[in-house]
Image (tube, rainbow, N blue to C red; front, side):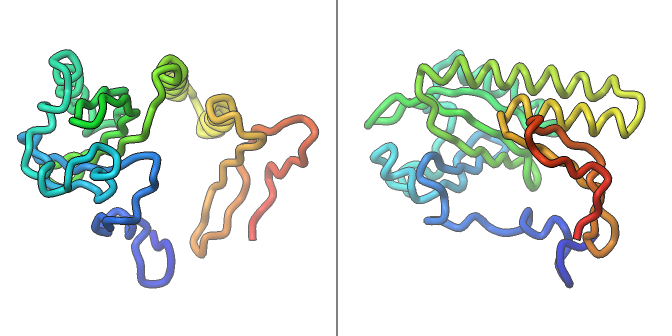
Length: 197
């Protein structure tokens, strides 16, 4: 499948991390199979008061409590089959801060982890959302038809994200698509069955 002329659909996946282009509400890290930090976004210095150079090469587990370290290592075993999401409290000289961490398995035994700030009072909300997403994913596995699955997915995505409208497209070659499912507020226009462009 081609995303645009001459580029495969997974082109963005192959792009290197670009220091300085990370959003300010979080940071990125890459760990090798031994939990050693091998890449980190430059903004880690402004967040934790440690230079990138002083973070690189360190064992990531050293920034975690023993309980979070054990939970983190157990979670990594899931990253080959799903994108695990968890909350972690990181301890740096400047602060102990809670983060929402999204973990992806990348080349070899490396792990890309995206961290977003998480206020302590948001932790319960995030965990409830994660539970809701996990429950929705399990319900999708029970669907008997593709039509049933996309209808359920649209409704669940709308419920979790609180968006006014969610549409699911089925794409053809040339990136023309048909709206095959949607969930929307009752006062909105519906596009089910319409083709774009």
